[in-house]
Amino acid sequence: MLIYSHATREEIRELDRLSVEEYQMPSILLMENAGREAARILAARKPAGPVNILCGPGNNGGDGFVIARHLYNQGFQIKVFYAGELKKIPALSDPGINLGILNKMDLTPIELLETKNLSDLLYSNQPEIFVDALLGTGLSGSVRQPIRAIIQEINQHSKDTVAIDIPSGLDANTGEILGIAIKAVQTITFALPKKGFLLGKGPEVTGEVIVVEISIPRNLLEKKCLLKQVP
Ligand SMILES: NC(=O)c1ccc[n+]([C@@H]2O[C@H](COP(=O)([O-])OP(=O)(O)OC[C@H]3O[C@@H](n4cnc5c(N)ncnc54)[C@H](OP(=O)(O)O)[C@@H]3O)[C@@H](O)[C@H]2O)c1
Image (cartoon, rainbow, N blue to C red; front, side, top):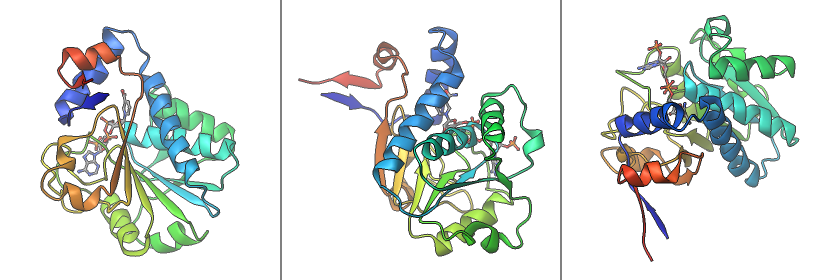
C-alpha cells in the first residue's frame, strides 16, 4: 500500500518544478491529467442537471477549463464562468491553451467581473453541482473581489460544491481561512493531500478528500519522503 504525506504549498511547487524541469514532463500534461481525473470523479456522481464550473486566474482555473471540456465531451450539461477578464490570460500559457480549445468548442466562459447580479448569473440554469476552480495553492493574502463575492454566493446557496485541489480561500499550509473560503462537500486534490486539510478550519471546509494521481514521478515523491510503500 502507498502512504501519501500531507504536503506544504512549497513542497507541491517543488514537485511541479522538478517534474517539468528534471523529468521533462510538459506542465500542460500535468494540467490535463489533473483536469481529466477530476472530471472522471465528477462524472461518477452522474449529475442529471448542469455542472457550473467556476474558474480563477491561475492554473487552478486552467484545471477548471480541462474539467469543462471532458465533462462536455461526456455528454454532461456544463456552464463555465471566469472570475476576471479572459483577454488577460496569456494565449500560450497552459490555461490560455485550454481556454483556446473551449473557445473553439463554443464553450467560452462567462466573465464574472462585478459583484452585482452574481446570483442571477450563477443560478439561472439551476445547477446541480458547482465546481470550485477559483484559487488553489497560489492563493496569497485575503481573498479579493470578485472572487470573495462569488464564494459568499456559492456558500449561501449551493449544497453541492466540489473543490478542485483545495477549497478556494483555504491556506494550503495552515488551514487558515483567508477572509472567506468555499465550503465543499468534496475536495479532489492533486498528487498529495495538503497540510492545511488537517489544520485549523481545513477539516470543516474540505468535505471528503480524494487524492488523484497526475503523473508526478513516483520516485520523485519517494526521494522527497512524501510517499512510502508499506507492506
Ligand atoms: N502546473 C502544474 O504542475 C499543476 C499541476 C496540477 C495542478 N495544478 C493546479 O495549479 C494550482 C496552482 O496554480 P497557480 O500557482 O497558478 O495558483 P492558483 O491558485 O491557480 O492562483 C493563482 C492566481 O490567483 C490569484 N490570487 C492569488 N491570491 C489571491 C487572492 N488573495 N485573491 C484573489 N486572487 C488571488 C493570483 O492573482 P494575481 O496575479 O493578482 O496575484 C494568481 O493569478 C494548483 O492548486 C492546482 O490546482 C498545477
